[in-house]
Image (cartoon, rainbow, N blue to C red; front, side, top):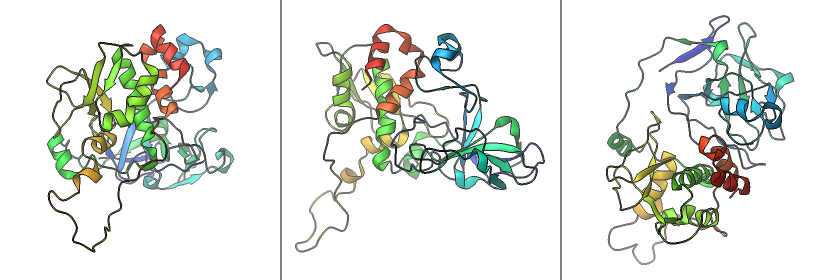
Amino acid sequence: MAVFGCAGCGAVLTAVVSEVALPIHLADTHWETLHPPLLEAGSYAVDPAPYGPPWRQWDEAGAREAAERGRFAPFGALSNGPSDTILLAPGDMRGTRLILERAGGYCMGIDGRDGPNLACLGCDLPVGTRMDDCGCWQVVRLVPQAVVRLPGPPERPIMDWAELLAAGALWHRLSEYRDIPAGVALAQVVVASGGAPVEAAPGPVAELLGRALGALLPAGEGAKRLDLAGPGFGEPAADLVLVPVHPQTGDMWQPRAGAVPVPMDAALWAELAFPPHRTRLPVVGGLPAGVERDDPLPPHSWYPFQPSKEAFRYTLARTPAVREPWLRAIYDRGC
């Protein structure tokens, strides 16, 4: 576990936080809507990609320079900022103030466009960027050159998959934001398909990705079957399997039966593998006559589920395979 302090004066800047894997659904979406924090309180992650100003457009930088910065197709502005920024939940910050002249945003908060906007109260050194505008996950990015890691308690032990399941560590409420990790998963499936047809297994997988895969990939015989696999769930016969990403290490759960694993956010995977509304019903019988439910039925959308187009394109733009003509054509078409 760690505490981060100011490199200028040594003042403590954060609560005690434990390192976790970088979330795979960093894409911003849901404009005009305030997002929840990207990370849970008491945790931090490191983003190896450059972030922050100065910003450059794709045409200005060129494909070669963009690839060096981890971008393989045009998607927003390119950052010339520092790599390895440290991401935290805003509530874990201590001893900082907002730099008001750098607090620009779209309409509901700060979007980080102006660079570091948090300064150390001890020495006034800019140490990080807070973002909480609509369309942005709420997060603070600490500038790695402006902070130091201070001594902290021992790091939490890495839980194995059985412990994660037993502790309920894979379950989190995604609510209306589940389309973001779904868009990431859709991109990963399309890449893994190699451009071949993909048939989603009936049930949760088809409900989540079936329509989008049908629109993006060709139809025909010899389709690759897509299903779920993972800890406590098993390995159905399939060519491609959606598997969870370990929330602490970022490693994928590995199948043994030879199917190609496709990474998926652990919370979304758990929601599909063990749906709450299907696992909390009595095994036999029902409610007594005259007794009404106090647990609401699962919500049913008025329209078919649609994975996030922004998250889909965000993920593909950061995948070297998008330079292949067949995948670039899908990227340009969107989902």
